Image (tube, rainbow, N blue to C red; front, top):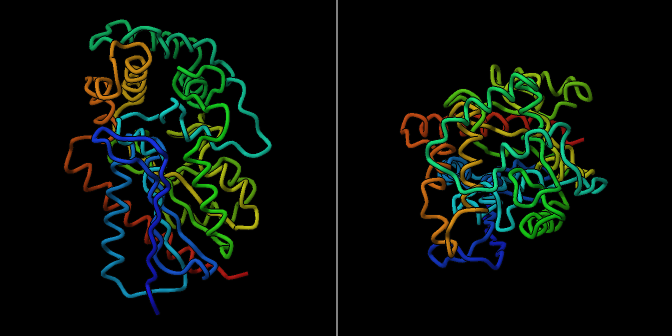
Length: 349
């Protein structure tokens, strides 16, 4: 048996702060001909990618010291949004939120969520940010009282396709990085019939706790699988539902787009979301950074990165806290190991 190892770089033709070539890195361990694969992705939201990257490196190190295998493949996708990771943005080089960009092939890049127009101006001011904004919390509270927290959360976060300079913009077409990634998967998943996908994110939920976010429809379409995952990950499973838990319904996330494009594969997937700070603090940081990028006084990308709003965004999604970071790596490994066991226990039929 041989732990076959391969590595490819999907170069985007753009540069990072050190003039480095930015790329999506894909590493494969094991056999893509086995029919089974577990896929770990990080950096869909750019600056959120550092904890996911740390998890991936830790798992790679463990696999390098483990017995070889050819009964499945492990696919690591590092930095789906390398621009955002390098320049400390959640969005890519076109201000597109890539976790709203993977629309199904029957969906259209148009429209806004219900209620979005009522909050658009508050979350997207057309002015540079200020470190102190005393009215922010008061205005946010008024919106919550008027619309309800769950409705407000859904309107802000679902994804919009009308305002290119605003946050949560899903784009007008599948972006270059997602297109290249999809093409790579089309070529390399030809023999795969069962795939367990984990996409790493940070921000939502109690600090240091990881929530495993499942699509809302799974509870109704495949109750047996839903209950198996609840048993496998007790205390961590939640649905992407604004009315239940930390999540909300999303349009165009990476898993939706990939599942739609690979209908012959039996998918199991979730987002592993590590909590950092309270929702109001998270949305404020994203709002401030985008205000700076769109309306601030900077002459180039280097100047844009050298600003308090970018550093604040980095630390909102990757807290400078050794205990938090240790929890992330520990739980990342535990979830990966359990997901692998689940995958290998599935029948080949």
